[in-house]
Length: 243
Image (cartoon, rainbow, N blue to C red; front, side, top):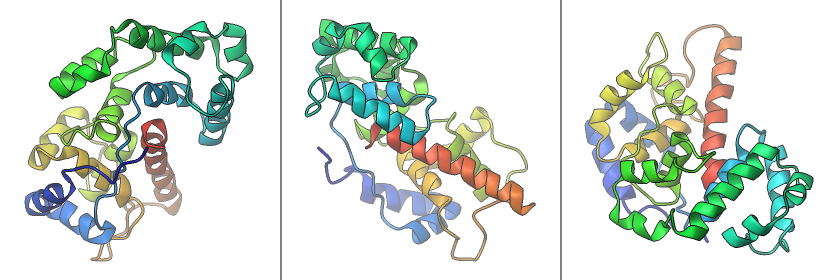
């Protein structure tokens, strides 16, 4: 079930406009924040595992086949995933490694070792540490879960390709920003770095009001390649935990 959106949207826009003139221009072009907050927990993380290192169409096909193994109407419970024979998971298109990852996630949830009810009492880093104990769930996946499933307002995924490409482009950096530089720049966005990242993902889809192109100067082929890279970052961010 999709909720209307994150609760911090209006305050985030006001803050980002005041704190960063570059983002203010992006906000003017993009418009209001449209982060659809999802309430799924086990399903979202399972989907993230299934989608890892796969093109969108192939991943969606495998995901659909996986759900169909259990009747196809509702997403399976952790117990159902644990009880599923490995050969059935393979027939759905899951690799042996991903099957093991899904079963490890299911075991953590079924045993209570991973308890989503506790998350409301935990800070972001505690949740990241809790989630990444599961095989197949890395820091980036945990950060997307924080942003799009828990609605946490101040997440900065420093390894996200779409965010890094957008920062380089919009702030006219000669080189791709590393984690340290990105964190320093993002200090002005606190406590709404999640919203800033959403606008950075969206920035590749617009031309700023002053006419500045959404790509760095250089050859058309290079600019097109970087737009595709940024788009891949946006697609991964949405497909892993939002849809």
